[in-house]
Length: 246
Length: 251
Image (cartoon, rainbow over all chains, first blue to last red; front, side):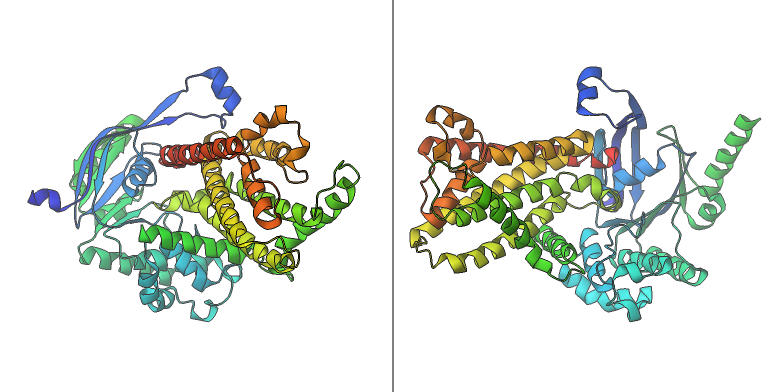
């Protein structure tokens, strides 16, 4: 009972099949062609991630990393199996999504915050902290189309960071503007870890993962190939690709 | 639930704010369309009508206002999920908030426009206390019908993008098979059953009765229309609920 309670994510027999659409099918084509080609992105995955763990996910492109993150985040549903998660989950994918260019920074904070699962009252409480962290105080009343790319990213990250997630999901293309803000945001993520929050990162930067993760999961063709100590898994991962390359 | 309502209110606010941003006339644009249509159709159709409809311009205006609400909501809601794909990919939130916010914002506009319309109408002397009851009933039916059908089309459009084109094509024809520019009474009774399959018929007739004292929909018309509205509403909710889990796979 107790061990179940301290789980952040529990995936049981998760499979995800995609229908291959070479082109978006039209209703007519569907009626004519009948059955569709299927692609197994994830094949019977069983996974438990404990609260407070910082986990890296590695694997070649197309191995199912992003699909796995999407299923954990609840953005898409698995074809088979059950997902159990505890607490608030937030993904750092596409930080600028959900912003409207014609609305002010202030209005966008509310809209984005609510999409991420915060209540209005909660956003109000955190408003100053969000603005301060994003460093956009001067522009808070101006429409978003006047913002620079960096400002938008900063605001996006700041909103996500203040959602106060229990589990944080990151994809590799996570980049945050300039050096200064990058450090600030990594500090924030480090802070999450210190507070005992769960962090799951999918990435190709093996050195980064080796330095920061406590556990690495290697995914290959939709199945878990190896799972465990970062040094050991990464070593085998690299050996595997050396031998297949030879 | 509370969270969902707050999100819905927030998204509706966004729709309202963004719609008439940087326009001089703002909300008035909402009235310009039906007024223009009313003037042109009113002028021309007077030549076609065998028996002129009393207060024909008012009659037209009510119908056009309601029809514009319906067709605008449906045309905007149908592609909305595809349109907002980056929201779908970003976070887990009730997907229905996207089309519902569009409908709600349009509905608020409709209510304001109707509020404005009531002013000159008080001089006609057709407004009665019981009329309000019919108007409210009509708006409730309209609201549920628009939600049901929009949920259905917006969900299906994610997989089958032709839904969007079908909606546009159907709406053009639908306008003419709804008693907006003509009263149902000009249709021979033996064809009435056709209108029974169009839920907009009762909605329009209830409003025309409530505002202008025109004849009420018959019991068969009203009951079949209402059943259809309920059916489409349920179907919309079920289909949307089922499809929305996998929207991401198709975007």
